[in-house]
Amino acid sequence: MTALTERMPHVAAFPRALGTGIIVRSAVQLDHDDHATITAFIDTYESVLSRFRADSLVTAIGDATHGGTFDFPDWSTPLFDLYDTLCAATDGAIDPCVGEDLMRLGYGADYTFTVAPDADGRLGAVHGRPTWRGDVERYGSTLVTRRAVHLDFGACGKGYLVDLLSAMMPHDELLIDAGGDLFVRSSQPVVVALEDPDDVSRAVGTAEISAGACCASAPSRRHWQAAGRLALHHLLNAIDGRPVRDVAATWTVVRTDDRQTALSTADYPTAVADGLATALFVADPNLLAARVPDHFECAVLRADRTAAISHHFPGHPFVQ
Image 1 (cartoon, rainbow, N blue to C red):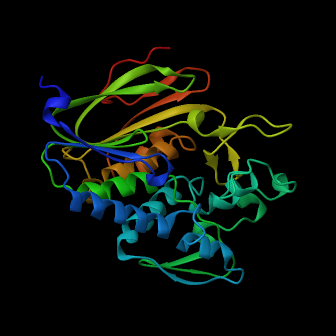
Image 2: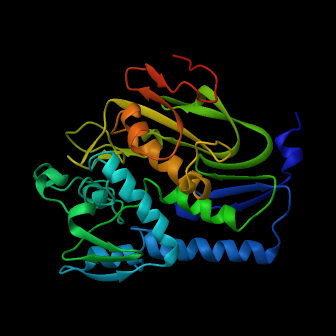
């Protein structure tokens, strides 16, 4: 098997993208103009969807006390479609309006990591927090609100950006790594180590993919401690607005060469895999498989170190 570095010898880095950085490996070197174009698009993407930027459209929606009409770029429509699907598939447990809960738990644009005094009585849809299905009207890429709505597109947004970037780089050999969310277009399988959430220096297994996406989700790299509380993290159940405790990590693989793949997966495999990796924290894998039109394989590592692995997951057994 030809080494990855031989098939894709050229590396380009976008270190500030989405707070995690993006690394691109390819058979064809990105020239200066290509790099500048991609950098500019990443900035545009963040100026629309980042809740951490004061000048973003998402921030403007959160600042609009009485709501308003907000026109997003046309490229945002498939992302909104995916959130519609995941919100319905999880009965509201995945919801971009969870941004308000994250802010109350201290994970806001100011990075205070201090829980709001009234958080317990206001977290989640159960306490009247706005919801995607109840408080946001959508007309294609236009959102209409009636009150302030704090959106967070972290469940799918990183993967979706990767897919948009992959379309800008139509190389036969391409790997895009956005903080562990991978898009792969390769003549030979790429072996991916699955990081142990309890020890980031080791892996609990591996996966292989040559066409499509492999995404992971875990609280191990984004958590904080608040006085008098268990350690907090960003993977919330949007219904009660609280961090999920019974799942330690998830991995999803969406293959674009799979005959069962739906059109949305073929176009946006990393967004689908990214969103499903988050959804597996709040929904049973079998339920998701029945409700989501896209075919996927997955592995779930529970908090007690037991694992649930789909029958055709393209990897080796987990180390318990």
